[in-house]
Each structure stands twice: as structure tokens, then as C-alpha cells.
Amino acid sequence: MTDQSIKSIIEAALFTAGKPLMIDHFLDLFPEGERPERTLIRTMLRELTEDYADRGIELVEVASGYRFQTKQNLTPWLKRLQPERTPRYSRALLETIAIIAYRQPITRSEIETIRGISVSTELIKRLQDYNWIRVLAHRDTPGRPALYGTTRGFLNYFNLKNLNDLPPLIELKEMVGPPDVEEVVRQ
Image (cartoon, rainbow, N blue to C red):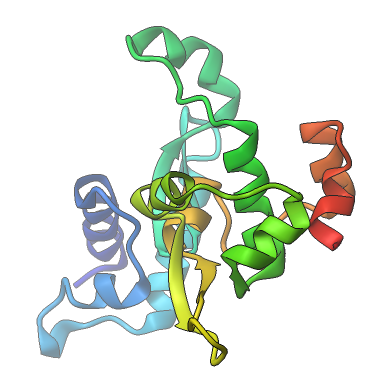
């Protein structure tokens, strides 16, 4: 099988998958005796990234693998195609997810202590429904409170490969504005 054939198969898989694909997913596309090396798959992915550099879509790597997505600079034009509005997230939801992302694993009572206000069950449920957080474990203390952490879904939604790609707290403060988000997360 030629490199171009392998590249075409990878490209087609990325367009039809509907979810990010990892290297193992690409390897599974090929019969046992015809599987290309991982290095060749990575080379083909780099070539596809270059092929789409001057187009309206790009190949990106997120926590769950590789995916095609539209370039962010085209958002103003593409919004006209979507009759529904972009979801608006409450300040409470954004503060809570920021605290979880930067301080995980963390309990609900610790989140409440940092925020200085109670966190509703509905808010935690909504974050779980978005697949942004999950229960990682339970603390070995009375009541066995859940320890929350972010998911790959959170990383994918925010276009991150891993938690190290989160913006520094100072940038987060500038994006969200007062009150001091940096101080809230550091507490």
C-alpha cells in the first residue's frame, strides 16, 4: 500500500469519525498484515496538517486524539449558518469549572470554601452532563465526599491537549475580569 493511500484512508477516517481519533484508531483501520508503522501514521498526520494549513479547516490534536475543525478566525462568518445561539455560561459555572480545572482533585465543600458561596447540585450535575467533570474518587473522611476532576470532554471542548495547556491564571483573570479569579483559584 502506498503512503498516499494510507494518507487518504486517514483523511477519510477523520472526516467520517465524528470524534477525535487516536493513533490506535488509525492502526485498527488496516488489516493485521498491512498495518503501517506508528511513525508513518504520525508522518501522514503532519502532512495532512500542512495540506490544510491554507484552508478553512485544520487538523488539530486534542486530548482524545486528532480531529478536523474549522479555523477560529472564520467564526464570524460561520455563526450566520447556526440559527441557535452559542450557549452562555453563568459566572458560577465558569468559576466552578475553573476552580476544578486548576485545583483538581477537589471536593464540593472545598469549591464552596474557595468561592465563598454554596455550589448547587444542579450546577455540578450540569458540568457532569456537559462531560466536563467526573468523580475521580471519594475522600476517605466522614461522608466520603466526591473528588471532582476534569474529563477529556472538557479538554476537547476547550481545544486543549492536556491541563498544562490551560492559560496561566493571570490570563484567566484578564479574560473573566473582576472579582479576582486568580485569587479565587489560588485560595
